[in-house]
Length: 285
Image (cartoon, rainbow, N blue to C red):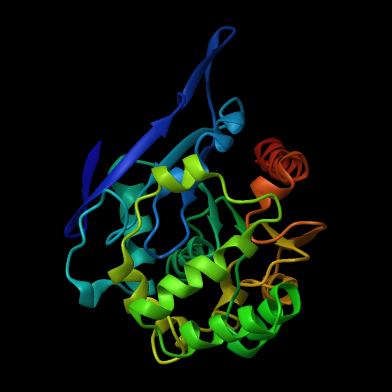
C-alpha cells in the first residue's frame, strides 16, 4: 500500500497483526520497522528472512523516498535529515508508538538520523553492519585485504569519485564480497535498484562523507543492539565497535565468518541475537 508521508507517497507493507487474542484479553505486540540499505535499494532485502520474527512482533517494511516503489520527490531532499524525518512521519501516520527500529548499512545510518532527531521516540534500535561515520581509507584497505589489490583499487575509484561507470565496476567486482555465501540471483532479480539516489549520496564530497553521529548519539538512551561481521569490507567491524561506544545503552555483538549481509552468511546466529534482544525489550517494558 501507499501512504503519504511529508511530501511523498511511500510504499509500505505490513506483516502480522499488532493485536493478538491472548485468553480474555487482546495483547499488543511490539512493532518492528525495517529500514533498508542502499540508498538505491528497497525493502525486498528483508524478505522472506524476516518473516521468522512475525511471531514476536508486527513487521513494517517500507521503501524510503527515492528508493524502490516509493516516489522520488525532490532530489534536494535525498538527505539523512529528511530520511530520518520520513521514518518519524511514517510512525505518526500509521499510529505506531515507540517502535523497535531495525536498520542495516545505509538503513542503520537513517535509523541514527531518526533516533537523534527524534529522541525518545524509539523503543529500541537494532543497528546491523553500519557506522556512525564513514572512514573511506578503512573501507579501501578492507576491500584490498579481503578481495585483493585490484578489488581495493575498484572500491577506491568508485567511492572517491562516484561515476556510473565506476558504480558498474564496483557492482561487478566488490558487491560479491558483501556475502561469503554468494549473492542469491533471485533476490538480486527482485531488488529494485535506483542508481541516481545512490550517486547523489555516495562519496567523500557528498553526505556519505560528511555525516558524523558520534556526538549526537549520546542523547539516544534506548536499548540498542549493534551487530557487525568480522569480514565486512564496506562496514568493517571497527565501525560497529565505534558506534556501540557512542551509544549510552548499547550491546555489541561480533558475528564471526560473516561479511556485510549477516542474515545471509550466519542466519541462525543473526536471528538468535535479534530474537533474544526483542524478547528482552518486550519483557522489560
